[in-house]
Amino acid sequence: MYAFRDVNYWPGRKTALLYVMVSLILLLLFYRSLIGSLTMRQSGLDLLRSESLILSKFLYSMPLFLVYYVVLDDRIQKSKYRWVLLLVALLVAIIFKNPFSEGRNAIGPVYLSFLFAFFRNRIKSNLIYLFLLLLILTIAFPVAQAFTHNKTVVISDLFQTLESAIERFDIRRSFTSLDYDSWSETMATIRYVDTFGVTYGRQLYGALLFFVPRSIWPNKPIGSGHLVASEYLMVQHTMWFTNLSNSFPSEGYINFGLIGVVLFALMLAILSKITDEFEKHNDLRLVFAVYTSFHMVFMLRGDLMSSFSYLVGTLIAIYFLPLILANLRLGINRSS
Image (tube, rainbow, N blue to C red):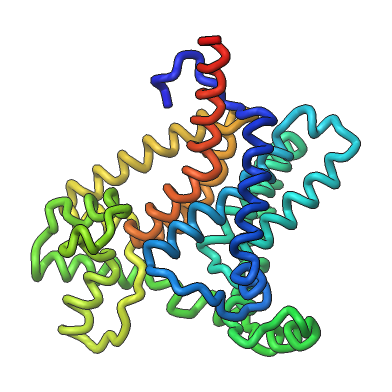
């Protein structure tokens, strides 16, 4: 991106219109799947995992850009139709990223980044931001969990949906369930390294090359949480499933030992420095900053392979692709 001279960080109306067209095409092609998602039923699509990830994490993330565009574009914010456009953009986002069926690690960064991009110039106090975050993490997320963990929910019977969700809602369980397994998984990773040794970066390059299909790379590493569970916890102890997280420091430890913990801390510091710098601007850099910052909650919990691939897929859709289109248009204008 920095190879462009005088980088243009705002894509303009043509890029926004292109994203509108892509969103309409996706609606036409996958409307049955999207309706199934909204009603909590099966999507009806027979896809491989790689195809499913491309669809859900990249293509379905493209309509999200429209919300950022409406919130950050100066001309739209001065228009009398800004609230109508914002409502339409949000409705489109909800269709593609249903907050009642998607996991919290997927919807959290999306809607929190919407919220903070919208209020960025309206709220000046960090204390208010902190208060909002506490409300969201202690109330909104547990409520969302009551819906997303209720597999019988259907949108056709709203009262039944609410009644079922309320019956299942227990805020104590939200804070004491196995969803918070990062600490214990970190302890298990230390024991794994004591038993088998470090992986010398194998888990890291497996995460960085997440886009390579296993059909091409049969020995592609699995996620670190899955690895520790399958090769240590299920063998040495009584663990019965492999869908486990693995914290960011733990990922550094399983790759390079204590040196890896330091290296991963430095990488996190560099990323934090970039987001701090980007947050000062009112363009695509702000989109990168707020989305990446909220996604770090997921990445810090882990595991690295899934969290990094989800981050990259979404950022390509809402940041890198609009940035490339903006600068290609800038280069064409200069050459002409």
